[in-house]
Image 1 (spheres, one colour):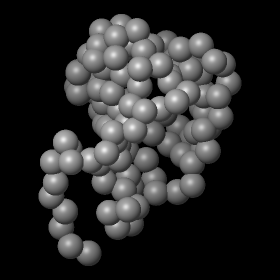
Image 2: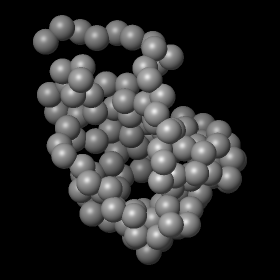
Image 3: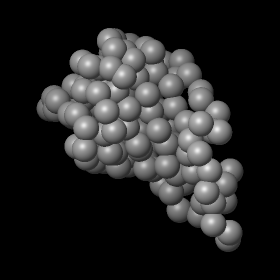
Length: 122
């Protein structure tokens, strides 16, 4: 495996259709030959977010900027820059941006991931 160095601006930005004003970039992933984990960057604009959903893989996140209320299971958490978040696989979670843009890095295992929407509201 060769080292990889690239600028995030060179990575395709994809809109998340189930979210509101939400996009993502796969900064490093299976397409780059990453054997174990993918590093993604999410961007959510003010008032945007993601509805309550589950994923089949865990999420490890680092907030870069902005503020959001994240529901994880039955608890709400307000997060901002330099906060870290761990969401176990299968646990319902949602995002509602309080101060945008809200941006965070999200590391996930390179495994099949199924997203299931539990509630359409953000």
